[in-house]
Length: 423
View 1 (cartoon, rainbow, N blue to C red):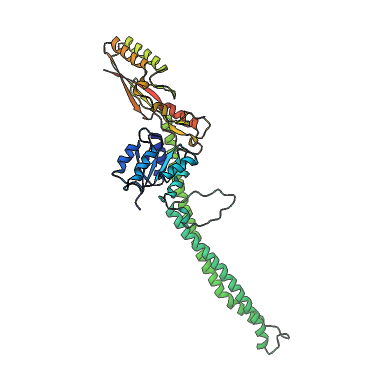
View 2 (cartoon, rainbow, N blue to C red):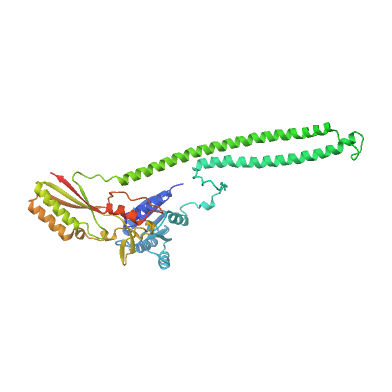
């Protein structure tokens, strides 16, 4: 079956990445757009199976984009799911009135994404699949999930074994009843053969023993054959369980290796050019202002004293923080103990709304001009916006991840880097 395709429309890169990874985990191919206008351009040439639409975006907002999509006959049939921090029954009714299939909160967990995909019929409903109930011993932990191919082999082995056991029990019960009936008949017939009445004579022991042996022989043969078949099925089941244990062990080894690699990457400082410095930027402050100006002033004084000639590259980067609040009253950093999936927004709206001049500040511009004049161009300062280039990877999503853990990484990504380039 051809894989499904989804379009995520959101001006926040972190929001696109988080939702995109969850969709890819369900086998969907993911395309992204940073605005409603880009989404409309994309839909002129492509037809995704679903669109996840943010509400608050610069330019055309999410509701306006939904109106355009639903008013065009070529795109009206594409389901649109609002992907936003907006909540409430009134908002849901308004979204559905415009043609949206539903509302998916940005504080989502993987189960919310799976539920939405089932609702849109983009995933098969697992409730329709046949289930095989297997009783587990109370004291044992639940077994790990089996790979589909090996699970099928285990079922194929277990089901005949169970059927064989039931057949063997039934056969032995029938044989027991038949032997009992034949013994009773022998007890009644034997006295007649010797010319005596049943009440007055005793049946010959030899005849009774022969009849019993004759009745038991086929039963013993059938029982032996059934036992051999049962042992064969048990051996096959043991082999399947052994193969499953090997596969599970290999998967566990791979998982531990991936965890170790992620931990190593988080603990390894980023590689920077010779003479580079990194300055942290507090959320809510312009990057090239405050304490960074004083640090740069001291750096330029030292470079002048040392006779440095060349370029000084000043580049600022934006981190995506776990925030609470809303667009009307503003956003603040979430409390450290709050679960990350409960954040109202993952991003940096304060920094995103700053103009180029506001990011650099008047103090910074004056400092750059003064160093150029004082060194007669021997020291050239270049300033660049590095966007959301990561210094440290954000932690993977989990139900136990807290806002404090997330924001500690965001603080390391929210920074100014100064690089010296002699020349």
